[in-house]
Amino acid sequence: MSDISSLENLRTFFNSGNTQSYAFRKEQLNRLKSSILKHEQDLYDALYTDLKKSPEEVWVTETGMVISELNSAIKKLSKWMKPKRVSTNLLNLPSRSRILSEPLGVVLIIAPWNYPFQLLINPLIGAIAAGNCVVLKPSEFAPATDAVMKKIIEETFPKEYILYVQGDGAAVIPEMMNNFTFDHVFYTGSTAVGKIIYKMAADKLTPVTLELGGKSPCVVESDANIKVAARRIAMTKFSNAGQMCVAPDYVLVHESVKEKFIGSMKESIENFFSSTPEESYNYGKIINAKQFDRLNNYLQQGKVAHGGRTDKEKLFIEPTLLTDVSMNADVMKDEIFGPILPIFSFNEKEEALKIIQQHPNPLSFYVYTSNSTKESDWLKAVPAGGSCVNNSSWHLTNHNLPFGGRGFSGIGNYHGHFSFDTFSHKKAVMKTPTWFDPNIKYPPFKGKLNLFKKVIR
Ligand code: NAD
Image (cartoon, rainbow, N blue to C red):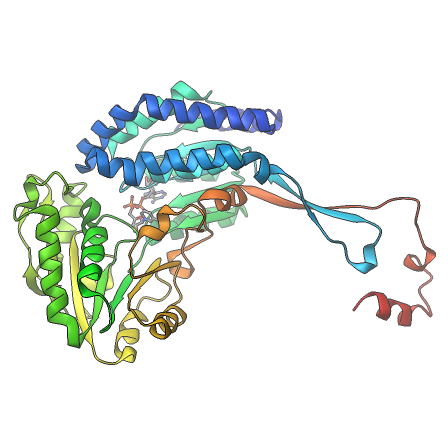
């Protein structure tokens, strides 16, 4: 990005009011959908190149998820856009009150590389639905997908409406944010970069949504259905080779079922990915050598209970279970974001909680139990962005649920109508008739205190 005047073109386009009407927004959503479907095969090819994802995995976690979000937005847009009538308090009667959803203006959406398509386009849907102009900044680390997305966006939208900006985030994003005032920044990525974005936004009082990462714990209680728990944990931990923000980062299993759980995990891993996962249709690869090296170091930080094989050439790390891990090891300090799962056992809930509390406010928290009291106790005990009971990660695929973190795992949320709300300003409007204009509301006020106490309470 070297031409800041192209950002000013978005401001001019937004100020023209063209993006405001229902017809315009709906047309853009439909155009986006057609373009994605036209390039469906290109996206399969690109996501295979970048991350070795199968078409089935791409549909469930990338393209299909986006199409489903688009279908819902197209269907519900007129409802979302309707002003919301609210009641008026006694003091203001006979005024009438309503809430208008206004577009924010020109917004910046920044995405990471792990679900490079879905994490850029899903927020875009909310931003278009809410009537904004958008600058899209994809990750530079999924170049094949980046190239297809550029084609989709530039074939579909004029640059003064949706601008696609490629390049090194550390250079391009500060250049844009320091030279132009965005009306909102929607960022998905690491907590470390999230803090940089937050600081730059604060300088211009730009509101932000931060969708960050962290260590999402997974508790398996003694009364859990162990076989099902292991299948669901193995599936979500090793999908996309563990490079998923809501993947279970580590497991805390009740001591009484630890051996059974580890046995079931091994069985599930073999069933899903065979004994040679490097050749499996269902198993992905690590994004690049830098991430491979980071993950490879973790393999030495515990006892390998399963897996452990690697191939740097193929960017392959086997689905790996680690036991006997020290809490001071890097693998328990950093977000793992790869196919390595440390497993700890506990006898008392407090022991497990103490471990979880070392990384407060995770993006997700998962508990496996068949006891509803334990379920609610656990949900209360661990503040998190979102949770699943007897499941992991799938909550993010239901667009009727808000998706986002809290504290260190993020600010704000999106998906479905929550996306529309994120990219809208809620404007309070009160309309007061002129036929009723009592003197009580005007000075002199002396002697009116008792009456005020009756009206305002
Ligand atoms: P990242 O933070 O390195 O990069 C994300 C984006 O920020 C990229 O577009 C990049 O170009 C840009 N960027 C990088 N350095 C920058 C800088 N100095 N200044 C400004 N912008 C910069 O993240 P990543 O490695 O691409 O993704 C992995 C992280 O993202 C993990 O922590 C993961 O948990 C998190 N994540 C969160 C979610 C979520 O929905 N909460 C989803 C996916 C990934």
